Image 1 (tube, rainbow, N blue to C red):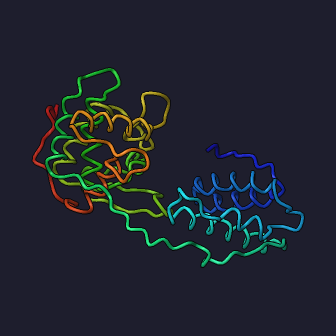
Image 2 (cartoon, rainbow, N blue to C red):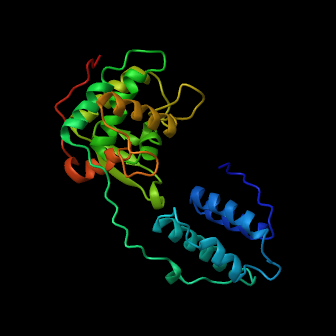
Image 3 (cartoon, rainbow, N blue to C red):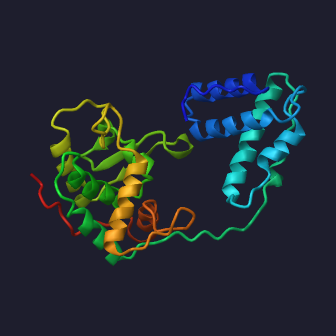
Amino acid sequence: MPRNKVFTGPLTGYLRGLLEEKRSLGFKYDEQARLMSVLDEMSKQYDCSEGLSRELCLAFVERQPNWRQATQEGRVSLIRILAEYMIRHDAPAYLINNNIVTNQHEDFKPYIFTHKQIADIFAVADTVKPNSVNSHIFYPTILRVQYGCGLRISETLGLRMKDVDFDNQVLHVINAKNNKDRDIPVSDSVIKYMKWYNRRIHPVYAPEDYFFKSRFGNGHYEKTAVNHYFRDILFDCGIKHGGKNDSGPHLHNLRHTAWRQCFGMGFRTRPRSLC
């Protein structure tokens, strides 16, 4: 969603003010901004002449059949934050109760790759033919980072050169989920792949450059592109993809697998070429 989103509903001033306030404090607020856009459109169907109405709040958080509990919780949290912001600015607003969240007692079971499947995934990634877009260097490296460090793909792609400490074998993950920073140790075998990638891709660089930089502009690889290519790798491995609404296997399950069975462990595989 564009960061200069324009709201057009009756609550425009408050939505814009809240968004600007949060971002001025250093919050990315991208997902919340998307929900604000949904609320902005919904508000046009309700009487908001006296502020944030109870009817609009209830409609915004009413659980839909395809929602997970976290989806409803996110909406409740946002509408409460907006209400509190409006009240602080002397505007009437209905403050919805957190207890409205429908507790479904969800038992989420992520897909966990077996050791053989992980070995097969790496083997396929290592056979990518050399090409002009450097897929043969990118995928063997990033998949090992995902599995070896247990990062979210957005965190990995967001790494800048200054965040990769080769000497101490640490990745500095900045402004991650919940706007928190953290340091992630890197095993010997994964750091070898990252050094190999670095030598091939970054002969010259600036500290602010993305480690997994895109060939186009100053950005990084797109998350959707990595997800699509990973599905092709799964197909070549004979691992059936679970579909959009299934629990796996997906790229994110490398993170689940890392935390479940092998976080902090090294790998016996080495780059085909470390030159």
